[in-house]
Image (tube, rainbow, N blue to C red):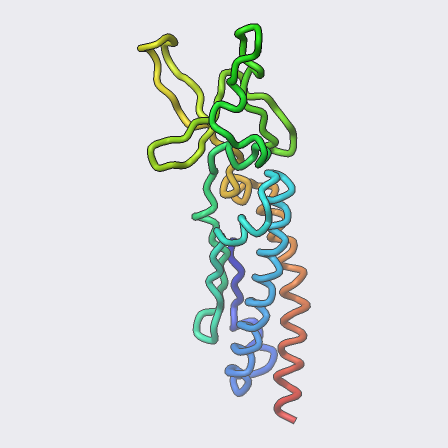
Length: 197
């Protein structure tokens, strides 16, 4: 998501003498609008994925505008999907918690229970295991089963980046950007004009 401004539009209205003042006001307005858009995006992604806002925020990068570059960008490239373990209750994040045997010899649960995408679901056939780097992950067997067959793969939760890039969220951010930029540009120009008095 990016917010940019064409300086020529204001030059025509206020004249070239005010170009420096306009550029400063426009860059300030873009940056304030960008932060507002980012906050709205983080909230929307969090609501849709049930990922904590602070975790989404740390994966967003803001490229702020300046007088010579009247464009600001919210970059969510680092906001990738994480293992399903993030959506398991902390008290249940234990190796073999869900595939422990009951007194009859069967499994206590058919799979790991996790609350991803805003709903609790049992992922049949999945289990929690500590891998070579020491992390606990939710895994599932693929291919043949049995003592020698099959491999395991990690189960992935919601993708904040995918949600961020969705058309619905892009429309939300564009609407927020338009509304905030009009307001912030007026404020920034008025502030700069007051300094000239």
